[in-house]
Every structure is written in C-alpha cells, then in structure tokens.
Image (cartoon, rainbow, N blue to C red; front, side, top):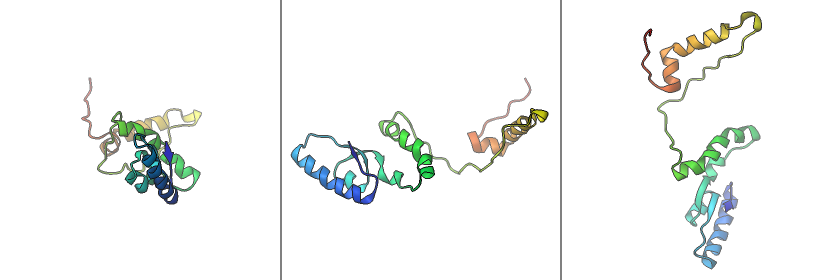
Length: 130
C-alpha cells in the first residue's frame, strides 16, 4: 500500500514504486496517489487530488467521498451526477414546547412545494386523497 497525498510525495513515491517494480515485477501496488504514482502503475483507491483540502473542517467534508471511493472503484456503489445543485434551504426541525408541532407543520408544508420536493428527490407525482 502506498500513500502520497501531495505533489512532492507523489513524485518521490513514484520513483520508489518504479524501483520496487523493477525488483519485484509481480507486486501489485495500490493506495492514495496522484498523476505520478498512477503513471508508475499505482492502482489508486483514493486520488490525491480528491484530498487536496486544507483545514480539519474542510477535510471532514471530504470524508464521505474518501470512504466511498473503494466501493465506487469496485462497482459496489454507483455515482450519479446531478444536473443542478440543490438549493440551500436551511430550516429548523425543532420547536419550543409551548408551540409544539408548528415547525413540523411548516416543514411538511415546505416539502409539499413541488420545486422543493423536486430539488431533493426528483419529480414525484402527487397522490390524491385515498
């Protein structure tokens, strides 16, 4: 397993991988790497470009993608591209005890709006009364 998450590490690890491959040509190398390591024959599980973030909060935002990468590569997960980004509709789900249910009612009414529902889950036909 090889792990190089930035450009100079990718370059030097690729030189090392080439030498190791020369000595043991049957060895398979996999892990995290960039363009140099991929050119040297690394089977990338995580691309270094996908890790190119600074700061702990920014890294946390990328963890789901990093954890999903091996499953995407194996075909166990399928990535679906969306046509447009979801709108940034921030709303509150909690409510004060005195007005229990008011926010929940608002939430349900908000989800009933066709443009909100479509942006979250795509077009779904509305069902009439049972």
